[in-house]
Image 1: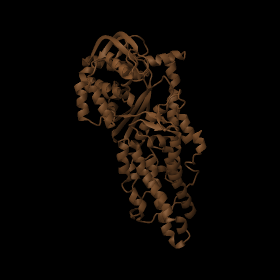
Image 2: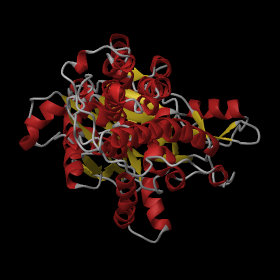
Image 3: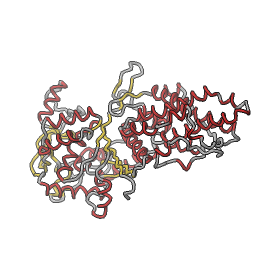
Image 4: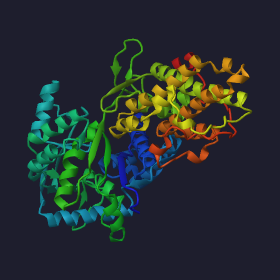
Length: 536
């Protein structure tokens, strides 16, 4: 098992009160691109996603649909799994918090917490937001109402919806005891929270003082029961956060070796709205039970919509009529175009405005006119001038200097630096530099003119080989973003065996093209988009 280094990456587990939307697809795709890159770079990847199925909000959604909570959750699961399959999400596991493995792990957690001394019984009297599944202190609510001019309305500081007053017996986790430990963690591991400005938010929050956290509920029963007090069910976040450890064998003695290999996670990908749960509560929970902390938490921003008339970024909502569903984007761009646009044109740490106009622009410029065009022109010329095959590769050709060879030199290293810090736009730029250079090389070398002179046959072969080799390398580097396209390009080059490599650095060394193998021209990879279709 341990021949390769482990890379364990997770998305949040998503609430089942509604179908997956553009934001959940975006977060899952961010993780998928990283997982695919890490597999190609030689890691043994575990990529986890799933559904958060407990809590008051889920029970309410079920009741509104005339179902039991379990029936409701079961009806929602295919909406997620089917969309992930359509979007080429390569998760290795899909966890649901109603599964026996999660129930066992959460009850084990309760026993460890009781032993730790960081758990006590009391009563909670305060404000609670059901949609956000979050507790708020009197001071937090008062301050928020004052800032928003909603004095006395008791609205949620996060989502703005009315809060509920909750008074009930509860078990509390001594979160307040971890303030100094957390601040020390942030000092010693400044890249624990990414991007940097998110770390500043988290540090400021913790430095302001922490309150103990209510971690059980008695006012409803849709949740995992506390093993030593069955009047109580587990607070939804206390349950949900543990899923990451459950999935790699926490609490299961038969999986101790797997847990030792996989834990801690290398990367938790989350939305900025749940950063406190993952960067404050979760590490404190792990400290309390003596388990290792995840290496990094990356918080992405929200997707907004750019108003085509005003140019302003607006929140996506049905009431505004600007909501975009994943299927809308698939219908316009196809799955591979969808993946490319959202992964390379959106700044992942910040809020980003999207628009159909920009989608069309990026698709046509990068995919139709540049990458797709390069592949089509080169394969057509190779087939035309070399009897449907790639040219034979002369001895020593790979060591010969050349324009494209020079740009491809060290390309995987430049790309890897960007990919490892989730700078997918930067990684794309590295690859597109070679794509653009190859297209210019076609114009500058004019192979159609060279082909007219039989005495220049070797020169023609060198031109076509340089283009084919550039395409081969770009296909490998584009694979995390557009896996099906890269597989198809390698197939057309007669190199299908190279797809899904686990030695990306080796695959990107200049000189891997095979000579004298049949090439397949095929359909256009990315037909140009019709402007009227995009506008519609």
